[in-house]
Length: 71
Image (tube, rainbow, N blue to C red; front, top):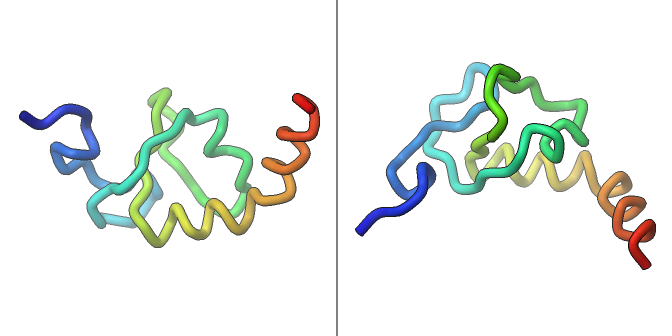
């Protein structure tokens, strides 16, 4: 039984990308990266493998700073 939109085959939320999504996250978390252009009309963002990798690279310092706040 398929559960979740990623498993059902939703496409990437980055404008201009039609690849199948591998990950989902909140729009707030996704906006840590200013490099990617999302459809901001929804609360969840779906990313394909390539755009998820780009998001990880461009938001690395912000995520590390966020983690340090909790330590």
